[in-house]
Image 1 (cartoon, rainbow, N blue to C red):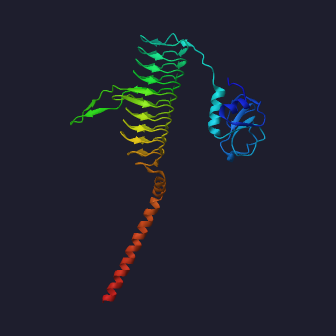
Image 2: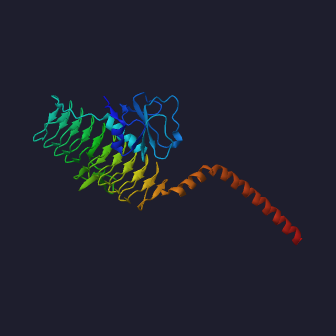
Image 3: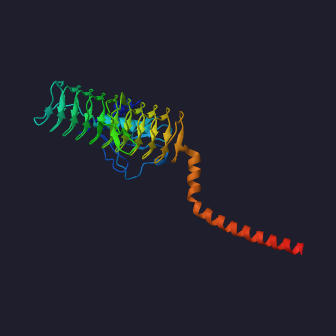
Length: 353
């Protein structure tokens, strides 16, 4: 059940200011098309103003510098961020410990706090240490000697393998696999593949979110490291010994090969691939479906496969779309050149005669 708050409380939460009645109480946040009386909505810029007549919202979050609305508003420098924080605050519920379900299986030497929720058919290996207010949903499997930090949420059917370290306020969505073996093989002269043991671990720092059915492989040696604030979408593959820097974003179906390292605030668009042993410096941005085959300097914005500077890639993509037309034109010009060449040769022969 969403909580009820005054506009003054919500503005204080996000560092905004109120236009209109600061004591107006709202009970939820919704999109412009769906907001009802008693709810607050939001616009990201002045292009979406004025609000449509069918919008029933009682209040609105707006950017600074736009005209006042006929309904109360919270003015915020970053309305998207303000809306996200307000929405999460209105939906937040206090932790209610439900204890350990009777069907859960706990290994030897596990350490559980008094306030914990362990759902049906959860399996904890030996010596698992679980922090305060952790929720582990049905069917999750946690391997031996794994540590889970406070306020972490592990959804149904997640697998965390042995000796992994999960930080505080981490969210692992349904089906994520943390700590499976890295893809490492040695191939002999006959083409036979021999598995290289993967004896490292995975470290996931605080405030990381990992989407459904994503995989983070354990290191061959040492650690695969997902640093604080990283957000990973669904169906992402992070190879062994990869390091992902703070607050980076990996969008759906990204693949990062082993031992690649990413700096802070790197953004990889959907289906982008990064070859192994490369380094992407801070704030690199990679367009969707790009292939990274070399190191990238700080702030680089690239696209394509192999990836090149984004503006150059955009021009190349436009040119590629025109190739059929350009081929036709080239053929026409070749015929014209041949015709002119024939005329020139005939003229020269006549002059010689």
